[in-house]
Amino acid sequence: MTYTKGYVVCSISLVLTYSHKLTHTRTNLLPQYRIENYCNNYASQHKQPSFQLFDNLDPLVTTQQCFDDLRVDPSHISRRPSDTYYIDPNTVC
Image 1 (tube, rainbow, N blue to C red):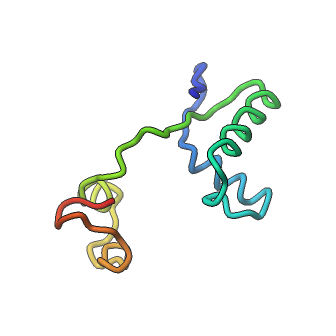
Image 2: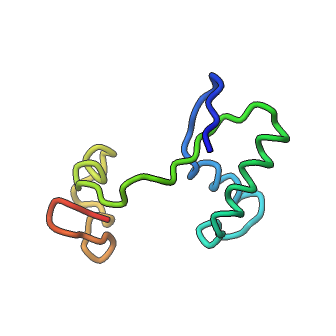
């Protein structure tokens, strides 16, 4: 499901963050059909959808992509092995 039509494209995480604020639910527990239903309802209500769904991204990324490209400080807690699933020293899930 892709909505582009010349509008700003943002990731589903922003849509879900907004949904979470509206419904006070944990959107990470919602089944995929609920997410797609939400997006379809948004599109029909607003007539100008401005987001794109990404559901085929590779879950494995380099530490460069996960931390350095996002400017995560080298001493930040999210880099610890207890907070990130390391496949090897250069790859995370």
